[in-house]
Length: 174
Length: 174
Image 1: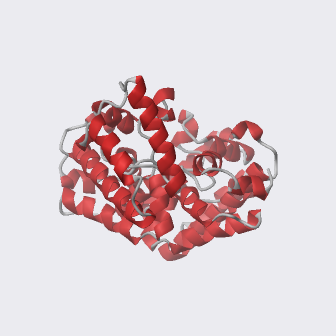
Image 2 (image 1 turned 90 degrees about the vertical axis):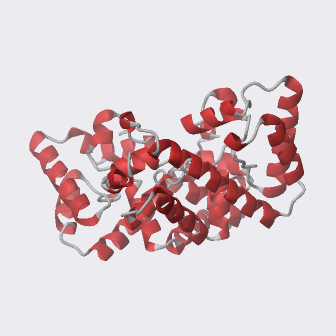
């Protein structure tokens, strides 16, 4: 799908296709539709990023809270979004041994207790060992640092999801 | 559920319960969790309203674009959210005769074509005749007027959804 095809989409198709590039936040996609036409895919990505940056700090925390735990309840119950399921599986999070699984659960809880939002990391850029290490390290950060860091990761996830949708032809998504 | 019980909810439960008080915008609920404790249900409602008002105009259009058409494709396909399905049914929108249905479809398309977002109205405060009349009238408005009017309706819908969740005991939702 080239950018002209993206720009020609009515908002309903645009939101159907791109509504989950930021996890469970179709409002973000639906908002940037107002800014079309986009000159390129990076321009669309930049519009999403600017929209996120325009939100109050509580709004950024809200975005993080729309994300599932890694290797958490939604993965076990099969209630992850399609995108999250693929990303978590690719990082090996669906095949943790029991020691890894309990460490992940403990650290996720510690992180959420400390910050009031979940640990967010671009799983497709990391493997499970790296994710566990970063989760453990990031638990030590200050809250404002983690909020900003989580949003950076949201943007990386968004970029890869966008590229997956636009750079591969996915006519069945239309 | 009293307000103390609401204030005691971890963000995951809070978002699970209240995540759809603004249609398909769990980020809004997830954001206002940062502002707890709420002194009352109206205080929670006010926090949501303030968050919406803090969004750029594109963000308000984004909220409207997360709403389904009334008596539209999602109702026919059974893909409405639970809340929308109940509200549209209560207004009689699931039992339009064929003349009403084609009028609704035509006016919805005209409205979306003109404004770039769907017609939003609090269905629980209106019956189908009134909805058709207002849809027809509101098609004549200016875009900025309709954006503001749609957001007013979003807030009415939100208030009724919140009241339904908080003022009735719904332990099975936890």
